[in-house]
Image (cartoon, rainbow, N blue to C red; front, side):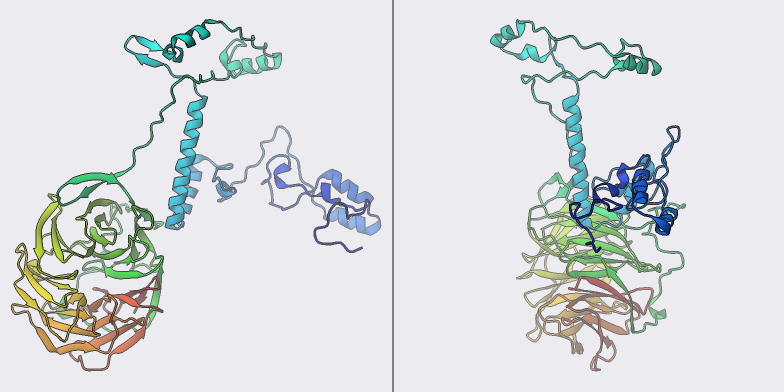
Length: 588
């Protein structure tokens, strides 16, 4: 007779050897531990096997009996086996340990948290906090009633009632006497070393809490605060920044070195000894951002780390460029202070030694991060959205910020205040570039002008505004220090002389790419031989610096806009790129 895969109990005949209602036994109902021995989905009892034997006959029954595996029930004096698999704590959604000690459970939990997405990790932590708070409230309610101490002495809750309520409480209410404990209970208490009259012999219910008692006030853990530095004040606000360490290796090795310290075999290379080559193929994809990526920057001088800024998710990710795996080491998260607030990273920069990262976000804050620990040290704000940030080369305590309201703000980290304001542009400031070791700097703006400033002097020394050029979206220095290149919104890269007389070199203009309407980075190879830029159709475009009129070389890099490019300062044929597709690619 043919049956369906999962028939109902009413449809089966009475002589069916394995009735549906009694043949299936879940693992949790077996005696002992359900994980003892091999893990099976279905187990059968001895009684059920006997019922099946009566329904069969001949050789078929003998073969069936020979192939059956009975479950061994442990004796009463045996300790049931416990499942010690690696994912035992995560059998259910509550993440409770099942058969593991606290240390092993915490190790497995920490290992699992490394591979969780940042948003899921944040929600899971909030869920654990709510569970702990709820457990603390239940524990407080089940405890004994607190006494309230005043200047005259301790008073119970009854002392806080009115006169009418005190008269009502004067009437004594006879409570029933508790039933005597059984001999079995008394015998168990004596085995534990307690007498039948002790409190440990039988659990006593906690006293009921009177409705007239004042409510308990739980001591909540104060939120983590951060120093917020504004133009006229310094305050402490709730911290909306956190970090995630993804590497499986410990943060410090046996000599106390972290991932920030470059490997010993990577040495700085002189400009005259560099020999760069064009990349030919993709060697790795750095995947982790959610949404567009605005910029990529290599670690100063050594280039063993690569940082990328999320334009949509508001994160800074630090990638390993030296080891074979090339994994993400750390992520710096920025949560929006208000719902649906844009908090993407507009620009960021390393400091001179790479121990700090300064970010400019669309939420109006400049943040100072510790590269090693991922801690956000301080926020800086003026109430205006910052568009670019840059640290002064010879002044590690100073960094400049170009704002949307045409102002350039100079911050002093030591004294936590605004040191100087530079006012000269007519529209938003896009870039800041230092010249001559930090003595002067150049700024570009949406007013289609380029202005030269002396540090700590709020008046521009020179203004360059030409009719055949538009606003410059990005600027980079040539490795020789004699030139700087500006990527214009009219699909050309202009070259300027960077020494005593700052002027444009008309014969050093690079054309042939499409960059209008987007903020696209430009960079040079370590030897200054090549120039690379992104393109709005996802290509990377390469020119020879000495031959700007030659046809550029294109390399398909991304499916959407290629917004950022960076050349490794040590590995002279390796280039990193990022785009609006959310992927950071590494080329060689």
